[in-house]
Length: 143
Image 1 (cartoon, rainbow, N blue to C red):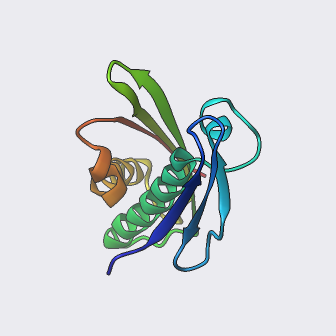
Image 2 (tube, helix red, strand yellow):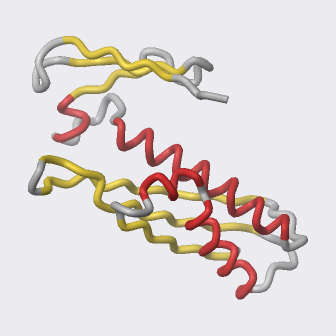
């Protein structure tokens, strides 16, 4: 089942601006711009912010599935993703994604949890997308 989104850009790369919308309406005409992406402007989103959200959500679900396969039901999993866009020889690239997750999993041992966290990093579809060209790190903690 394909998931769909639309991006519209108007104007030059530096002076222009755009909007991003998803078919579900979760995002509707969310603003994005050069200033938001490269200059730290406080308004608007960026493609990298959307990738961070996707990776955090994907990783949390993958971790839940792996814990479930081990007979554990998480009470909560909260994942923060930080996506780094950096200048490289041929332009810009996503060079690093740092995942930090905290989970409340009744009955989970530290070893079982850490193994599931490592396996989720490898098995999450968004991680697989970046696996051969981006450093992905995970810091996982039981609470």
